[in-house]
Length: 458
Image (cartoon, rainbow, N blue to C red; front, top):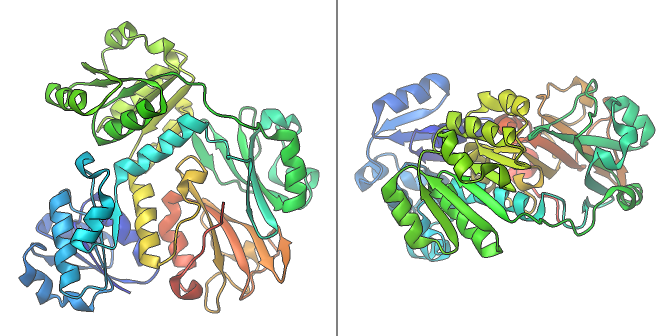
């Protein structure tokens, strides 16, 4: 497909890199020549140094010939305007990033008024993941996700201590025809390899045939596991902090926000009901202790700085806060997050890129990154002729470490695959992958069913 991305910032570059994996024809437009040069040196994209709000710029590139326009600048108004202009000028589909809380409850109206096909909001997406974790503790609502004859279950290994210390091949012998699809360890999702082992304190996601999984579920699942959290501290009163405070307050939790900017505090106080807003620098340990940090049930760090978020998350952990969540945009901090023992770390770029790709590929989201702590996604697709993964033993495929094939559905039967298994055309394949690997995944399945994928149903 022919796609133009307006805005060569972090999100624009992330989306472009992912789409290039599917061999799309990508153009990037920005008013900053420096940003475009940086993008063109890193990726094989065409660049246009122009103002997309000027319809002459859109006409000059023949916008009507494009399948998609993705407006990802830092301005909501510019994104909505550019998307609307492009659609009016003949672009087949348009997507806009819209972040302002004022638009939170009117996305449908915006789409209808501006004739926009899709709206994405990174802060709201992050909020949904954090809210789900805090309100339901990320336990699956009924313990099982299913597709056809295969099912996925998640549980803490303390419920099945026989798994502790075992490697993946040993678990396969212990639990025949089952597969550890992912491990949650200290806030980080791990897609296991053959040498990986389960450790004490881990949670595991196990895929297998439906009936054995149901029997396993009866032994390990904690039914009705909803939160009893009451006191939540949010550090950072930006868009994510605002969205989250509103949802948690509505849920009935006692929410305390610490924000260093006084004007922002006034805004939060005027627009939030039931949340306590404090003006102060959260990096001041005395302030945190005065505000009873150690008595909080959960702490969420979502300032605009990754370093502050990690430092504050570590501080909360050192004060024995049970649930600590951090918003972290840099993928390079992944290992640090594990070492710090943070319960959950979310990258808004990864989650938003995944949402945009689902729009572009034309398939609907049923299960998204929310299934595994906002860091990984489970997908089901139909293997079509020409797909890179068919007719080859899985062990011979050059797959990234952050993904695996969890199940193959063939002629009414379920195969929990090993390295010698082969995907055939027409197979329905379940895969799990880290969102950070999404560009590689797109390349592997770029020819699947003409780009149309189906996600597992809940």
